[in-house]
Image (cartoon, rainbow, N blue to C red; front, top):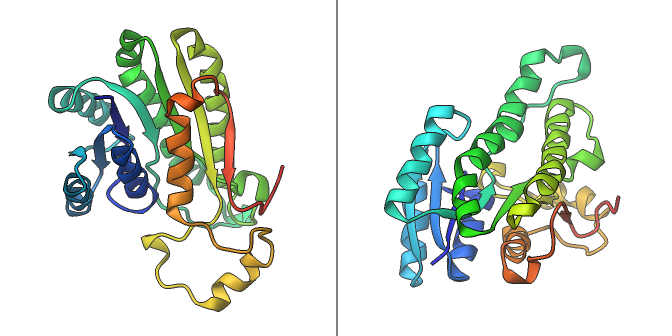
Length: 245
């Protein structure tokens, strides 16, 4: 059974991705940083549905944390051939006049450092298997260029750059590297949303509805499937056509 690691999978998009990949037959390593209860809940749901999953606590922005994670996943589930880089952190807004360099570094840690550490840690597994899949979770904010979100936007742009470069570097090993860029898809951290919260956004979405976590999970599932074996260096935007750049 092929092992898939999903980072930041104790809730939100990561939890939905983990459940979808398990339903598709992967053994899923459910990574969490703080919410062990949430990760164990996801694992329990996967097992109840007949799937295979284990929870793994690790800070995926830390060198030692990623090294320990790789060792533990291999020990408990086996080598990882599918890596979904989903973990994220706070995304504070700041106008350019208040922006400090640390704001940029905080975002780069999640969207440049963490994916780099993870790919390096599991590249030997993928090479040994003769191939693998890397999927990064980006954001359509890169095109939308929202005011006050310059640090987050810059880091997401860097993440897309990594995806394309790694796709060229790793293709000779049979490893595909792609990115899924969700639009605004409400999950637990967004809290309760009113119709007023949604009205303005929906007026700009051609498909006329808000995105659901399953929409993102479906895109990830495609990219890690055999149907996407010849797809690499690509960015799939999941936002109902909110932007089409």
